Image (cartoon, rainbow, N blue to C red; front, side, top):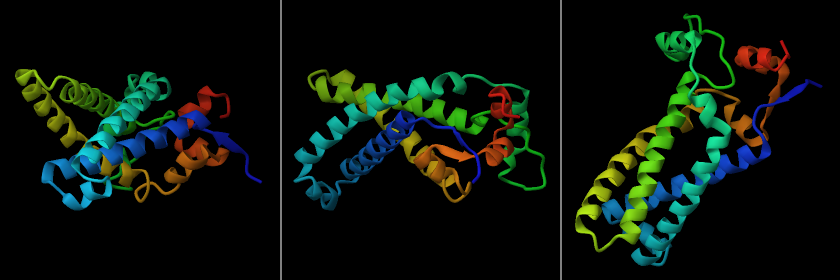
Length: 201
């Protein structure tokens, strides 16, 4: 039986799915608010019920986003020459003929995606809480709506790309975020710098 390597801890996997689930729920209800989709709001018992779900879903999302920083934030801020080269060859996604440099635990695309989610997540959370609790401040509401909508656009673009890259574009990645483990041979092939740092190369 192949030796397995743990890449994601149990709490990381659990929090990933809490973050993903709350994000998707917020995106669906957000679209329903934006386009007045009565079919969606009826699922939650009407607009007021959907607003309650959206608000408290935002609390779950905010807490989950903050907790995710213990798993990814430090790595997301670290880049080296191999990461620069990875960008030059677009990570090998556009052509299988290019040579992709050795990667650590996360590639630079994943790092930038995470930083974008953190930035947009903080913006959408703070503006969301402003919309929730500062209803009497007209100027604040105007600014909060603007920030909330811009951050929402970031999520609408980034999340589907992330889902695609984590499933169809990279077979095995979805399984990794369920079990948290992968064969040692595959880990050496996909994350050689991480394996070397762990003393397994």
